[in-house]
Image 1 (cartoon, one colour):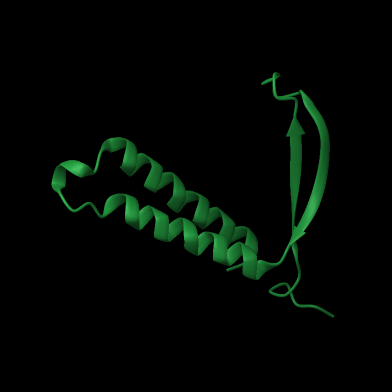
Image 2: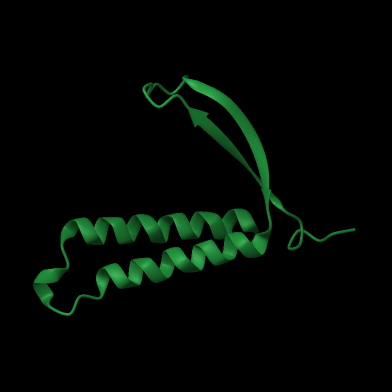
Length: 86
């Protein structure tokens, strides 16, 4: 029996028509398993990218857009870790 830490996570993947941005315009949907190690690695990469965005060499280099993007990456990393069971 596999523990939760070793069992794959399942994520739905949806594909939309390129010219249709409606929410209900999905052409197909599939669920793919992801190993928890891959999910944790992705969270680490998001956290590292957020750090790079906010560590500017000059004070004027860090814009509010950079900070917003960094905050989004940190939030996404936290969500991934939550669903991976960390």
